[in-house]
Image (tube, rainbow, N blue to C red; front, side, top):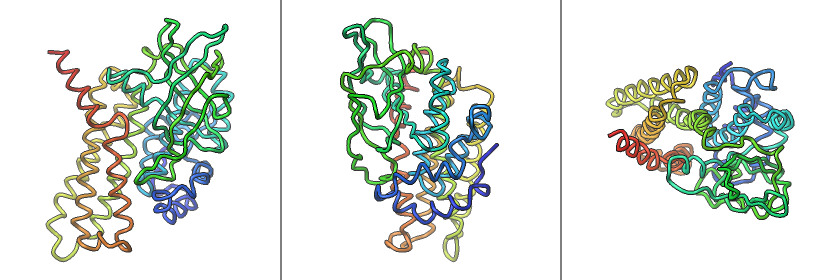
Amino acid sequence: MSVQLSALDPALSAWLDANALSLDAANTLSAELLPRLAAGRVLGAGVARELGGEGGDAADGVEAIATLSERSLAAGLVLWGHRCYVELLTQSPNRSLGESLLPDLLAGRAAGATGLSNAMKSLAGLEALQVRAKRQANRLVLDGSLPWVTNLRPQGFHVAVAVANECGRGAFIASLSSDDPGVERSADLELMGLRGSNTAAITVSNTRVCAERIIHPDASTWLPAVRPAFLGLQCGLSIGLARRALRESRASLGSGRATLAEPIAALAVALGEQETRLREGLRVGVFQGDTAALFRIRIILANIVAEAVGLELQAAGGRAYLTGPGAGFGRRWREAAFIPVITPSVVQLRAALATQRQNAA
């Protein structure tokens, strides 16, 4: 099952079109977004039907995120965070945790957040894990913080965190809840856009974690296995935004701007090639053994987004700089500024590729 743009629920499409600017500029609709996505049946895209999803695979999840991101990157970002958390549960050996949480997650009654950006950077050797576990009175308790996590709905959330175990058994992946004592959510971050995405920081203080909340006991071996889904689903953000910018560019071609038709067409072909590589790589499992290929796709897509919004600006001309007719472009310009910095950032990916090349040499 692929959630194509033409098949997106009409009510959800209309709501996103009407509220995309608000979702970008304010948090007034943030509580409403996840239930809307659930009603539009996109939360289960790429999740097996026997688990309560819509069927398909991770590539279908990418398409759902891309489809939303064409209309609102804030909506696409929320689906990415939520869908990544769901993916972790579906790949976890802790089946009882998934059985307990998936019904509410897929129905949009609870939010899933993926606080693994720090873990992905740690996996690439870029920083240490920021949440640590220690033994205290025969209990395992956590302390630390995560400075940037999306889909932390104040109404209730579950978040996956990578934990450095000071007891000497290596790092593990745990699921924490907004109801857990010691888990505190900050106010929404003062972002220049994407303000409706429930993006905030988390502080964890003396929070107890039990075996039932362990998503995986060995982060170092498991994270590489789930990284293709984490990064692949993230690529849906770039794909959707680039598609929309190119469509707007084509719609603005007219007298005096026909010279843009060729670069627009060439960029659309380049985008399609990366979509195909990503989809086939996810389905065949190429990225499990070749992370560099996935890193390169993510970098290329970020460059395509930047070029696409640049072409949209050139095609629209001065009209794009007016607050009225240019409102949609202004939002996409801010959205495009987010693509290179979402973790792992383009700079971090380039550094990881450079390190891989040096090690190979």
